[in-house]
Picture 1 (tube, rainbow, N blue to C red):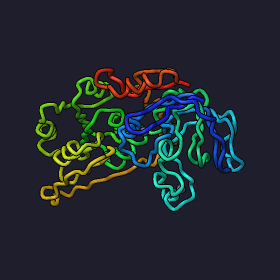
Picture 2: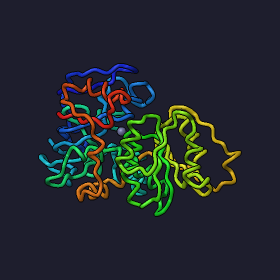
Picture 3: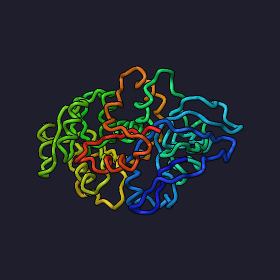
Amino acid sequence: MKALVYRGPGNKVVEDRPKPELQAPGDAIVQITKTTICGTDLHILKGDVATCAPGRILGHEGVGVIDSVGAGVTAFRPGDHVLISCISACGKCEYCRRGMYSHCTTGGWVLGNEIDGTQAEYVRIPHADTSLYSIPQGADEEALVMLSDILPTGFECGVLNGKVAPGSTVAIVGAGPIGLAALLTAPFYSPAEIIMIDLDDNRLEVARRFGATQTVNNGDGTAVKKVKALTGGRGVDTAMEAVGLPSTFMLCQDLVAPGGIIANIGVHGSKVDLHLESLWSRNIAITTRLVDTVTTPMLLKTVHSKKLKPKLLITHRFRFGQILDAYDTFAHAASTRALKVIIEA
Ligand SMILES: [Zn+2]
Ligand SMILES: [Zn+2]
């Protein structure tokens, strides 16, 4: 089968690889029908993710059809259409029993990281019963690819951890796919204001179309002043960090109102200064989280009922044979205006 393989920092190739085989009774082999590229894949290609060794097939998102299942799999049969979660969960360990699938002792974020991933014709999914989701008949499978990672990530790490509440004020720093996923799911809790902050006017325009009440381009470094002006001098109740840079996390520290929450979503590769000298007395909280995908069943229902329209995030489509072009398009988002790209097997 064809697969996109990480060959060390800055190096990826399409290779012929053997079709994966069942290794444990709980495994399933899934034939991929649609997959996508994540910002995290670009982090791996920069050499930022030490757990991902050269030779690894990348990708942790996608939908497909069950090809075969191990003897221990009871929830799925060959031919079933399934959504693949970016997080594999045994459902039985101490962390899984607490709903913290991301820290499953024999799973977590392993796909396209510690084991071969979804940017291939077939993928082996461990703990299939508790790591795959049935796709309802008639569902738009392309839209559901957004549920493998980015929608639960924006929702769980940003909206839930940030305790977005009716009438509250929210700032989302970073209007990339993850920030936009948080923007799409924040209205579940009816905040009064959602202020989107980015450096790219195109992405801010997208954010306005997606429901941001205000947008701020921080190219001139005046976002704090502008957000304070929009919030009666207070700042925001929830400041979501959806970039993963020291400067954007520091911006959140300046944006958060007394009693507010800084909800980190971004993947950070370097240390960040924490300004406790100004924050210690402000009753704030800081949260971090790796997505657990514990809200995926709920999000599936909201997509099915059209309350949530994740297809808005898809800007480009490619065949698997064009996956290197898909990477180029996704990596140069400022010029290509790419948000999420769909790669069809
Ligand atoms: Zn991802
Ligand atoms: Zn577990």
